[in-house]
Image (cartoon, rainbow, N blue to C red; front, side, top):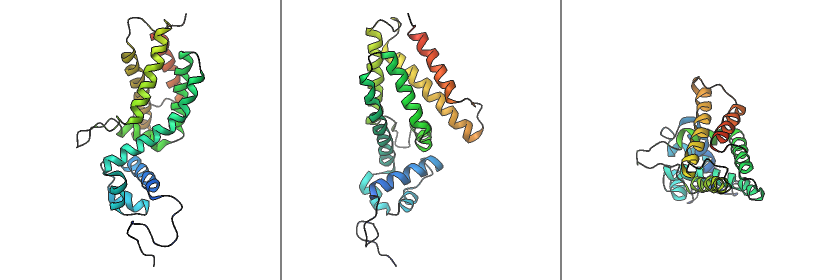
Length: 211
């Protein structure tokens, strides 16, 4: 029978996956399937093969764990966004940003559901946990590209960068969230990702008409 050491880990040979990473993976899985409110720290720790005290030690709270999951996801995305700096056309950058974002979420359904269903929900603590460092960096990146579009004289001069960014991100999040709801509860939104690309393209053409 195995024994547990003071760290909350089974004694003997060291686990292949560090406890921090195991808690992240377990939290992501349970938050995505049960929802944030119904996924307890006890259940997350059990799935991770560790103790609740270890979860608190690494993340401070359940909300801290959710924020860490979001930040980890944004960090992965940011490695792909770096390639945008090599592109000269701001319009090309926006389309590439869209493709990167869609492909990343399509390849990681759990992250997609977490970001879209749990990201903007107000918790009992009153915090909007989506406003993590990674998300704010994404917002800054979009603003930067739209600023380039405005400087190039391609953005409708009556429109402000922040207003266009809010509309663009809201459009993208809304359509992706409806896809998740359609899969979960037969919400009438049975369109594919190609439709998202077409709608986004129509939006971009409206705010920044091609010459």
